[in-house]
Image (tube, rainbow, N blue to C red; front, side):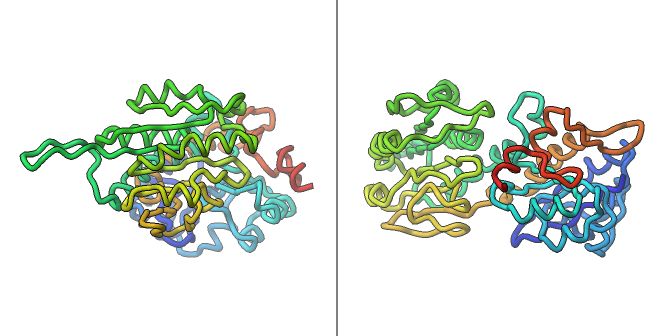
Length: 377
């Protein structure tokens, strides 16, 4: 099979879908790899490294898309790009299938097997393919570092002849993969860390990282089979907002990581809470690009509201693009390897495979993911 890897075209995107090391592994498995020239430059991978790995480098992007039996990338394609793909080819990337209905229909009509990296099941067996988790872990680290660059204080306590500096307080809302990494990073840098999550089951994880878990009695809460927090009722949301208001006012850094898969994220920091914070405090809104957890945050920008800096950059793992590329590339390699037939030297989509059942959206000219099919219909 010919695996094609085009450059990412999104503004400022430096990550790459496959790094040379994993390209070499795929070639050893029997694949042929063709990449667009300049593919890895943003993350420090030269064309020569891909050539040394055994890949072919070409400048014609259209040819990469048109020739490939498998297309690997990070961002979703345009409708025009889908029109260039061969019927029967396999396309793997983030697809945002809950919102990109026209894209899913185009894959179906073109006869392309579309695999969504967002839809990899959250299971022990699929952890090595779980790109959401790998990128979120880096995001948690990056968000803390970005906050420290805008905070007019240091994080650790410091005792000096000129006096003692108290440690800064970081409040992390949401203790998923990104939140836990943010807790660990802030703690390593010396901050006093407090965290909250609607899933009380994660309280022990927060404490194991040295953070304090903020107890707010919300009544009955829980999580999905994939580990995502369930949406709260209107009354529970009011209890959460009231319960964390005092902690937000006392914090120097607030990081929000609450995102509901396929839905608009909840507002967790309101304008009146921002007004109650100390001037110079910093908020990082992980969900700014998808609607925002913070009133006043702006997707892709850093703004100052009532003396508080609100960071909503988005694409957090791109700030550490080389490591992000390594992790995403590994996720993709393991996914392709999951369906790889060593005898025929090709990837086979087996809809009996529990991992592929969850992430294959279109196949054989049909929308095969029941959740997305019902949503579009």
